[in-house]
Length: 186
Image (cartoon, rainbow, N blue to C red; front, side):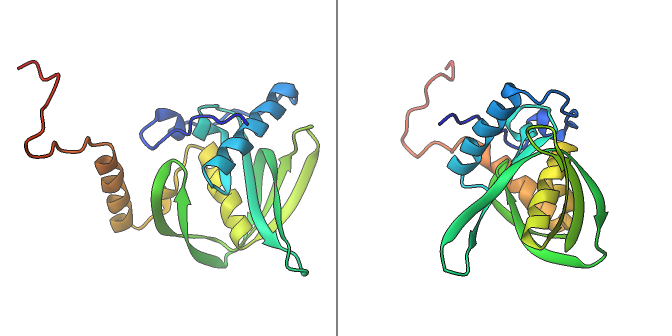
């Protein structure tokens, strides 16, 4: 298992647009495998290459679905160079989180149905129509590839709360009364 560091909000790579993948080689397959390991270790359902500091139009996704027999089966893949072809006017509401915003979840409106063209790790072209949760996952990851974060879709008060939570997360804990502060150059 090879995990990568997930970039946290504030890292400039999260706001950059990823570049089209042109080389469908072993290094792309290895990157996707490492991203799957990273996504699973972080208990996420999607991970864009930007989130691990790589500016390639690649994301991984995986959800667990239940078969008619009651078995739980993982379903997912690596998606290369996705292009949104169409989205429904019908909207779905739902909470979203992001591995680059650990522990934060806010309501986000997304189209209920989308049509996406993409390539697989071998370069073969595909088109898919997605609905509901899968449409949400793919749109979230495609946003990452364009430097767009889920907070950009939030209501103003939710965005302010998310930014405040991330600022507070980065602050060192205040010293406890009676503790010794070292390295202050007193």
